[in-house]
Length: 211
Image (cartoon, rainbow, N blue to C red):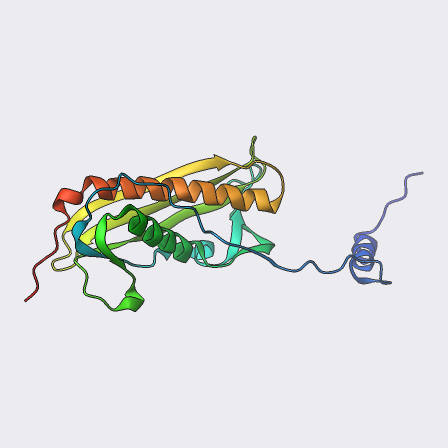
């Protein structure tokens, strides 16, 4: 005879496994990962005689937080978050910081500043993070990212450039560390694309004379 286990009994057994009799596993501590991609070398040359202000990037929903977002093949329309795996800084802030570091290293502009510097800038760079997620059930597992950037003149807000940067990067392993390393590689590659686009605009990146 087949014994039918009642749902209530199943729930009780699960509760005992999780929190009873000292047999449960200890609570895992949160694990914070840094998004600090190493800037790729640019073309170099003489910096444009102007100042660039890099603003923080916008982000909607989960992307504005620090929990790492993932999506499975079984539920492609459902964005989920890891409970214990977090970013040290929200991706929108970390990508903006990576842009600052990379543009400075490439010497595209004479100066690159951030809002906290309260400097008068000739050009403004901003945008939005649209996707930044882990795809653990894909074969092979990978990470995916997409963000838009817009460059405008500070004096009249006229557009100089507007482009979306997107890509994917395979994860070399199954550990959270491997996932974070893949995110850093992908971010470095996309930021390098943005820097190359700015370098191509150098002849037009002349600052506005002051009063």
